[in-house]
Amino acid sequence: QVQLVESGGGLVQAGGSLRLSCAASGIVSSINVVGWYRQALGKQRELVASITSGGSTNYADSVKGRFTISRDNTKNTVYLQMNSLKPEDTAVYYCAADRYQRSIERGRSVSYWGQGTQVTVSS
Image (tube, rainbow, N blue to C red; front, side, top):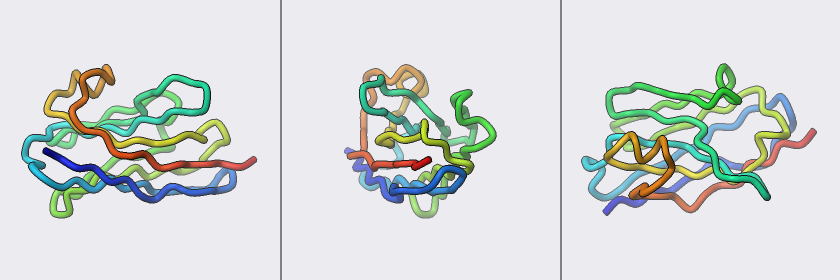
């Protein structure tokens, strides 16, 4: 089993920055891919960024150039640095982890989820 705990959400003005953290504990060796998703009120959940154990990253077009996903293996933590935030980035952000990249890409049958952290960007 793996436990994921997100932190770092909050309220920020448009143009500002936040850094989200996802700390993993448990049998972390079973994890190959970590993704950050978000779900805005009344909208479907979307994959924002993902990172593999080898360090390969992918981003949604809406956040490319503004968000950066990274990992610190010594701390079993994945980060999402969010810059130039926009009101449309407002959502609950979830960290997720799985052995298989396909599960993260599809958002289905994902093994582990965090509890979510609220990000609110004011205009």
